[in-house]
Length: 286
Image (tube, rainbow, N blue to C red):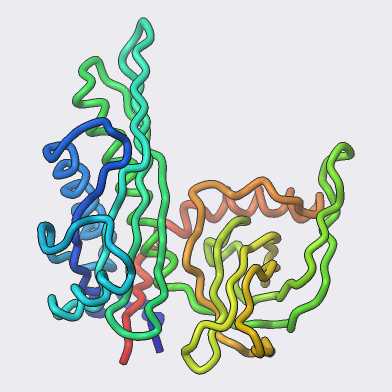
């Protein structure tokens, strides 16, 4: 089993080798990347789910998933992670500089199956000094990335209904109903922290056989539109479901109107509860 869900905060955290930061934004050089790396390591450690080992300079970032898993094994950690600065925006109106920083992170377990858990977050900051505004935005993005990774590694569900056709009614008259050729209903829901646009992997005997995206989130279950299915595979009730990505904001996909209202209400009410429940720890098992 890739991860096992543990609730007690006293459990041993997931050891992660942090391999560093790549910068695609063009904003800064080595000092900026080091600043981002420090902020992300701090945020991951403060999430209390991860024990972070500084493994920067061991490999050039970005690296592929196989390289991350290799470094994790060499570092004797349960997983390895890296981050990429995707964008830095600095706007200087008449007031204080307003900064936006977008970070992407990938976490790959050392053991098979090497499913890549992902996070992407935008952090914002403003301050009379641009450097401090950047620091605020970087810290906010790092905290959100740590939150997303903490959630996805802990989530494990199962298939409730096998693949079927599905039509989701449009919520606005000008939009068309959305038709999905193959969908499965899974046991994870909005109380698990799931959002529309979350990415899913379905496994059989520990082997990934399908990938999909969450298109409807309900209370008690969610609907996944399958995007890739391993040829010859037959998805069955009870198959293992892992979440590999939860967006910072729910994607704008069709939802039945009443369920959309419930989703927004419950998402708001549960935001604080989910933050408090962040002590749930996912451990990589044998």
